[in-house]
Image (cartoon, rainbow, N blue to C red; front, side):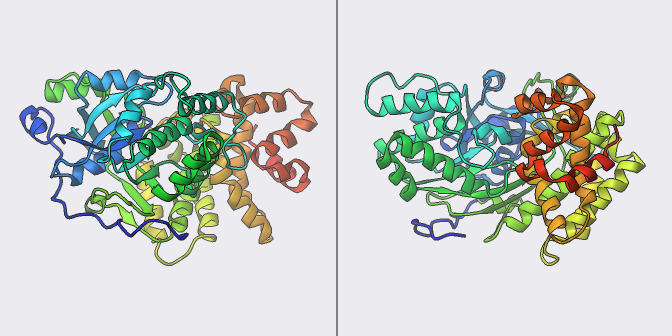
Length: 480
């Protein structure tokens, strides 16, 4: 934790217990809806609805913490949720049964391109928190973890924000980047003297609060140095580790809810019963009492981040790439494969060598992961997990490889994930299209056979381009 310019306002005010209504209880649901927006969310995803919005609904009996959520690149989710006035059904799907709940805390769903609405919400002093769920590539960061100021959408947004701050054109001109939209909204908050707030990125990036803080600082400094100084003094950035498997909703899930409740809900979210949220940072304008629903507030989030990244996410990546190569489609199918189960256990053994043995309950965590992976009814698609592999492996797998090699060990259990990723790129030309580094991957695959592997490995870790030992080990571990 670093020194903060904020007074200690992070302790929540007393709140009552949860309110999540049952499907079909429309009168109860209406009575339980908040009357004001205090949380603004960027990236209106199924995960947000199953996680941050769900946590908030669980603990906010006072109906104080309504959420206004904005989509990312596509407005479809906003249109879908607006049709039900923001209400949606969450299906918690265990391996044995389904349970249903309607969440009503999402009281505004907007197209992310609706710049005027975002600015209007953030300039309201009652808003205390901005949460964010985007993919690893959604922030526009480069390989070093800083904002890619040369990216066309970042550069275009910067020019729009600069012009807006100079009063040169209409503030409704749409922005396309997450960081640009956030800084633009913070500029509106500053101009209306609306006070401090907290920003909570909820993703799989390590030290995500610090990463977003730096990205916001760099963008704001380029736009207006006074704005950057105001943000430094008035906006906290909270690091979070989030965990709840939320596969894509299928048409049969929507049909199931309609049969059970009598309502056609196109915004249905399917998720597992397990949920986890760990946070480190300050809340200068207050927060919901999320710990009532199981959230954990800690001083040092790094051990918890690493446990999740290296064990849950790392195993997911191994299953996604190796499992697809072996003909599987879902996590439960892949973990039922004895070969892949053995490889996952080797990976978990390796990760455990680099995690604190106190406070993380690693044996129980492993047992819980295995139970979650074996849930046959959650149908977590391997290709969904495989997307954006380069960004994911840089935090999920590369650190373990580096640590093992530095310790003088072979690192094979972690390098097997890298080898499976390499096989996945070779298996079909379209496998790289969902990756932020798709162009570099295509260029690597077009090289001569002796140059392909070094070029691919360089994308994950630049020093591996000229590391014949890593080349040899990865080639030995490949299945294709």
